[in-house]
Image (cartoon, rainbow, N blue to C red; front, side, top):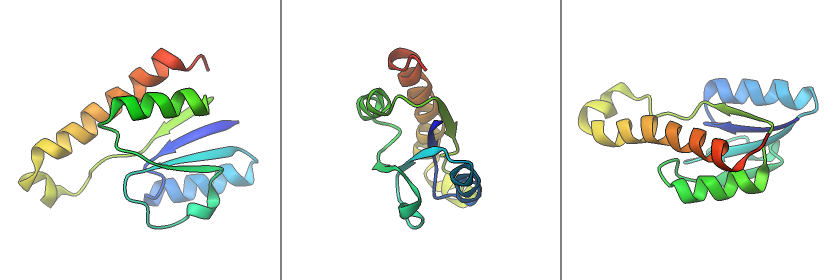
Length: 107
């Protein structure tokens, strides 16, 4: 299957990718700040989930059968100081990803 994973460099993402690759799936990783595992992907994209146009273009190009959304800003201390950015990334990013798939991905 053609699978997109956001937050692909996370702890859970890393183990999930390893499992899905063993099962023969094509994995497309979406990163904001990648730091490991880039060789494990069919394609790697550096993208900001806050940028709807970029997400829509990418989803249209990839046409994933499955989207696994693990991306989020989870640092609690950071959320006290920069709560607006955390809220925008976590909420708007999720809505952008869902809306792009609804709009341009028949899969």
